[in-house]
Length: 352
Image (cartoon, rainbow, N blue to C red; front, side, top):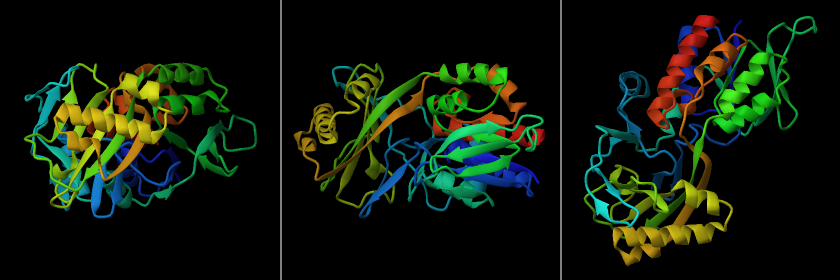
């Protein structure tokens, strides 16, 4: 029997698991996720009747394979498409129309987490939530175990395995830390750690701002194209059908990297207030400084700015270690993570 462990339940891991389940129906796939949810930064929360995507904003239709996945596997039940455009603003906060290159901007009425939920739900994989893996070990020849198999240990001391292959889906810095401490006496580990640790990230701090009134604007979102404003992104969640009741508004405000790094550990209420004030200035509406309720989330490893060097990742597959994610694809977008999961899943199927 083929046994595969998947560390992390992000979008790429879900796509890979779907490929494995379809091509190797006799395989057992065990997914270990540190949080209580799935789909990684494509994250959704609810507050009363309000649904909001507070990490990744939408799934863009920029890849034929991902488009087929949406329509043929995920299904269009509850699929929503944002039709309003994306405008831009500069370091001075001046708003201009004109940056909307995405043909479709998809989410679901229940939020973007539906992407991973539906993919995992279409498989026989077992997903263990709130299970943080902190150690990997490979059974070397002659030790009494199954030569070449892997065991994982979580932070509660429970051991999982043996596995014929391990898939690593956490952000690159967390993946590098797992590999750095792995009981794997092989020069491939060192070159893999170097490659994975070399991926640069942008940090983001997100404020969610709700208002008991409508905000009338001709755009869905504003993006800071020069990356020199404290705010990097503002989107109107009410543009997604089914997310915000009529007569209300909800803004998802994401900081730029430098602001997030400087204030990441500051009191959350102060960060939310600062981002609300900046948003009010950009959107020229003083009412926006006073939301009736808020939420927030820090994303230390939000957006991979570079991809990992491919060679060490390819060599590691010979030992049964596979990395997946948008940082492997070299593009920090949800569709890129899904495509990478499909492609790496096919390579793993071929190897097994």
